Length: 308
Image 1: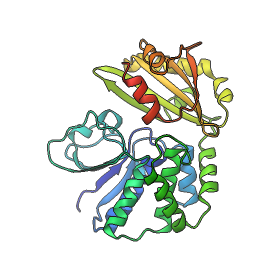
Image 2: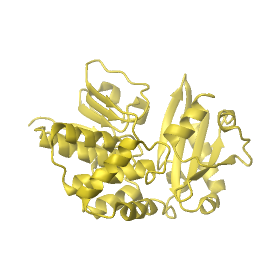
Image 3: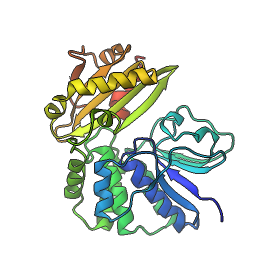
Image 4: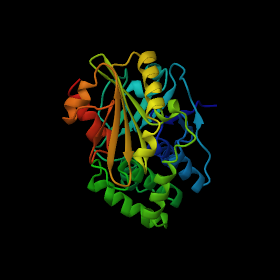
């Protein structure tokens, strides 16, 4: 039996990582690649679980390490430090992504699609259309969920006209009130009560490296920043342990209000100056309020990265 080609998004997967992986599997099979399988590199969050439950789909299987020579397709990421253990030994057949390209190298040519869009699924929709492949209702909901998640219902500065047009097209196929569905999906992801502090800071955390300076930018969505900040002390204790165990210079936790499009950040480490310089604000009690900041990719990372 031919070995399966694994499709996966980044570690600490979000809705785009999981749903785009599932969509890419479905599209690949429609194109004749039967030996493909979507998997995940971490726990499915509550927002994504809402989508899977809505569609009555099972979670993709968990993969923690790759064998040498394993054939893979990467979606929603390209940086090796955000991927699975053993990725450097894998045979990467394809990448579909909407992030910066960094820490990425292969020994063989591959298919690489990168677009400056708000979501990986917007790119996948274009592939369906270019190849003349019919989109099912299930596929439309998966892609629409990804777009609404990554763009916060098209309110994030990462949103492009391509994302807006894609969501409009997908809503017609999905046959549901996308805005209402999307709001319920996002709200499902803001239920943080039963997470430990360690789980909260890892829910959506991206590991980054700038010239040997290791740092993490994590993000949690909420409808009440004050409610999350009631746990600041335990969150800081969890962050300190992460900084020490991973040899980090900086850990930034963004607590993002999805209704009012603002964030409060908690920052710890030797390089908190990168946060202060990046946003022109002093941290008080290890935190600061960032009005209008909701995007890690377009707002948090660029401002912090250029000051490290």
